[in-house]
View (cartoon, rainbow, N blue to C red):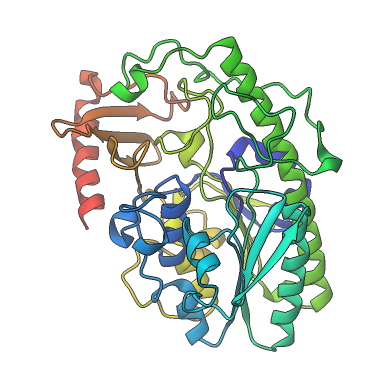
Length: 438
């Protein structure tokens, strides 16, 4: 899993495409239910939408690690089924405070625990390694994770148990140390730190400018978008620099994937292992006037890469069914012959990978808000439409959006007031109520 990786950036990951996509199945319509770190990771662990697992953001009192019942996750289910379970990298926000102050506080279900407890830095990493704090000062974090991932894999195979490993890279999320070419004060003012060998690898790369970039007319959108100004030249330049750094940071992740899968081949277990590549959420680079964020329920934020490779997964195939990160825990459970101990919202992807018509027409639910406590939003995504309700923070009637994704894939023109779509809007509103209240 990467962090904040937009779908478009997959083009620079040659190892992922060659070793996973070419040998497996790519889901082209994969979505993060709540496109921000903590809710998304909680969804992966539980197979539940955020309104069921209760993690509504990164910060207390609505979000963070303490909001999740960690005694009932896919790691617990698999460990009970006889699996050696391993965790590396970023867990759920604010575990760093717990894991640093009380290193013995390791969540249930994990046999091997190597989790970052040192904040957002790429070169000052401290890991809680099975209850002991280990510092990797001065070393590039992604490279540390690459070696640790290989070590974890080799130890897992040596146990002669089946294994489950969740490897969480921090890139391409922004992070310290601040570097000379960071975007400065415009936008968020910080990009990811890049490995020295990859610095400026994409220095001439233009910022993608789809039709939604710096959207000229946002009169059809909710207030929190209408109130955004057009992006200045300085903000656009900052977005471009941040985008270039994100691509550069992903090169080290791609190398790590190559090392990890090479080590898997060496164990002789490659043909018996399900490999999944995804991100917790996407990221904006100027679409809909949003220079550098996630949160919002538009495709740059909520649409994520998802590729499966392994036993019974067709090679070199794509699937267009709508899927969500709620489907990951059920997939892992089925692959590991484990029984979920709670009511999951997702379904296993194994059948969908094998059958392009399985679950055809199934909608998915999107949830979220720009920041904790602001403009709570719900959306239903179908093969043809996205219908969204945005509830004002002070209460009242929700603002509504309706996009016909067949003719408007960039979500430019909301059809919520178009009489030709009245029946569609009514039907989607009814379906949305059913999804978010089940």
